[in-house]
Image (cartoon, rainbow over all chains, first blue to last red):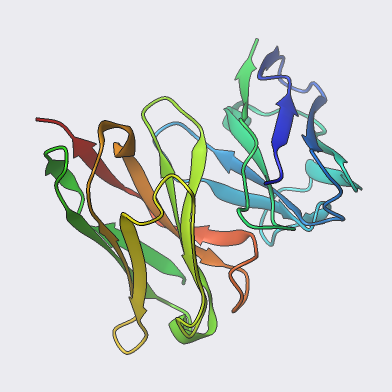
Length: 107
Length: 121
C-alpha cells in the first residue's frame, strides 16, 4: 500500500498570509493526487485534481504542484472561510489512501 | 446538479448488520465508479470500498474485507453498502463519493453529506 504523509498536522496563520502544506507519498505516484477541503461538520470537497488542476468553481487562491513523491498545496492569501482540514489523496494504486490531514486555523 | 444522499445509518449492536444506501441524481449514474469513505469521530478520512460503473469490479479495504459488500443498482441510481459483523471501530460517518470516471482507481469529485453509523450495546 502507498502511504501518504502530510505536514504540518496543523497551522495557524493570519488573514492574507500565504499557507503551504506538503504531502509525501511512500512511492512514485506520478501526478495521481487530489487535494480536498473539509470544513467542520461537512463533507470533503475536491479542490485540486491530478496534483495541479483547479476544480471548476474553486477560487484561484488555491493551487497545487508536484509530481512523483512530493507535492505542495498552497493558499496564496488565507481567507476566514478557508478554515478547514485539508487532505491529500493518491489514486495511483489501490487503496487510494488519504493523508492524515492538515488543520488550518486563523491566528 | 450532482446530488448524493446517503441513508440507512443508525445505532447497531456489535456483531450486527446494517445496509447503507446512496441515492444519486443529476448525472448518468451508470457511467461512474462509486465509493464509500468513512470518518470516525474526530479522525481523518478512511477509504472503505469501491465499485466500477457496471458493477464488474469491486475493491475493499483490508479493515472491512469479508464483512462489507458494496453493490449498485444502475436502474435505481443507487449505491449500497451492506455491513455485517459490525465492530466498535466501524463507528463513523459514512460518505458515498463519485469517482471521476468509470474505473475504481480515481479520485472523487462529489461527496454526499454522510450518514452516521453508531456501534454500541
